[in-house]
Structure formats: structure tokens, C-alpha cells
Length: 283
Image 1 (cartoon, rainbow, N blue to C red):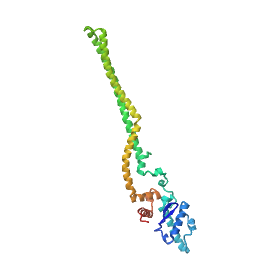
Image 2 (cartoon, one colour; image 1 turned 120 degrees about the vertical axis):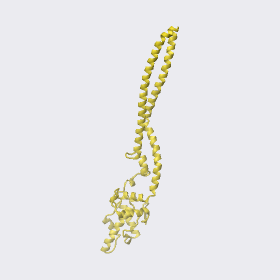
Image 3 (tube, helix red, strand yellow; image 1 turned 45 degrees about the horizontal axis):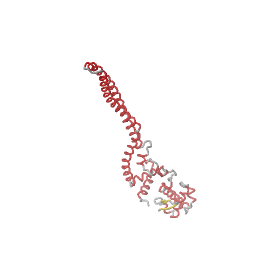
Image 4 (cartoon, one colour; image 1 turned 30 degrees about the horizontal axis):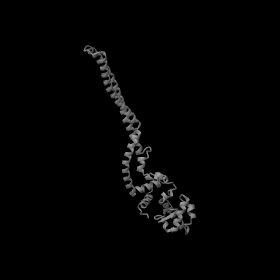
């Protein structure tokens, strides 16, 4: 049985409370309206002031308890719309989230929110560390290669100098004049030094690339994280779709919202009522 008030439709079924014998449809609507306007469960005095109960004292006492049970059932059946449960406790954070938060289900929040403790934050942090270590290792290797090249260059320069010195006398004896010998020595020196400089430049380029990579490590990690998150998101969408049609999960979600996250503190009767409501058996 439904009752529409303020543009919101409320369930005013009271089956199982005994109040069907005590309340007419109009009185159920009156009780639901009083709960809405009170923004919380009614006290015994407030409930009595509604004048829903008639008869002698004995009948009134039994009927009053039935109506109290009816009020509790109405509140719990409409807790998401009312914002509180029959104990007067506010509903969980799901009811109070802004529209942007409501647009994300738990799977997507876990992947994309980047809050501490989420899979998304853990994945991004791991990727940032991995990319940083990669470029740091490349930089260390490039520096080592550069130092090795510098030592090799110094050794080769000395070798060329020694070679020029040892060959100069034999060239003079062969009839070459000093200008020719100097020109030939210069050509040999420049050819070898040019090759060494190219090698050193390559090593320097590797070191620069490693430094640039280190500077952009977080950006590269974030792009890789998005690729991984989008891939995981496809699985999350499938799981969310499965959960959306899972009456058992929806029942337990509502029980957690109404009565807290500890199932050991739930009442069996409340659970049975919620199962009926979720599956439509209570309508």
C-alpha cells in the first residue's frame, strides 16, 4: 500500500503488526504524515494525540502497542526516504552524499577516488615508484658509462700522443718536412678525438634522457594508472551490474544502512521484513 506525500511515495503497509485491525487506510496515511512532519519517530504522547485508537482501556492498550509496531514498520520500510530508522538514528552516509558522490558506486570509488586505502591510490603509488626507480637506474648507468668513457678517452689521447711522438723521428728520416708531419699529426689527432667526443656525447645524452624521464615519471605513471584503472573498471561495471540484480546484497545493504554494519546486532524479525520488502513479498 502506497501513500504519496510531498512528491515522495511511501510504503504504508503494516502487515504483521496487528494494526490492520486498528487502522483504516486514512489513519495509516495520517500516521505516515505525522512521522514525516515530526522528522523522527513519534513519542507515546504524540502517538496518542493522533486519536487513532478507540475502545475500552483493555482494547486501547493492545491497539496502542499494535500502532506503535505499525509506526516502527512504516519508518523502517521508508528509512531511505525519511533519513532515519525506527530508533531515530540517522541513515548512513549513502543517503547524505551529494549527487556527484552518488554517481559513483563502490567499485569506481575504489579505482578512481585516489583516497588513502583505495586500490586506485595503491596502484598509482606503486606505478610512480616503479617509474622513478626505472629512470634512477638509467641515470646511474648513464653516469657510470660517462665516467668509463672519460677514462677511456684520456687513455686514448695519451696513446695518440705517444704514437705521434714515436713516429715523428721516423718521418723526418723518411724525408718529410716538419710542416707535413705536423699536418699529418693534426689529422690523426682530430680524427681520434672526434670519435671519442661522439662517444662521450652519446653517454651524456643518455644521462640527460634519464633525468628528463625522472622529471616526468609521475606523469607517465598516472597515464599508465588510468589505462589499468579503465581496464579494471570494465570488470567493476560487470560486478556492479550483477550486484544491482542481487536481492541478497540489496537486503544486506539496507540492513547495514538501517541497523549498522554489525550483523550480530540485527534482529531476525527486522531481517525477515527487509527480505520481504526487497523481494516484493511484503507488498
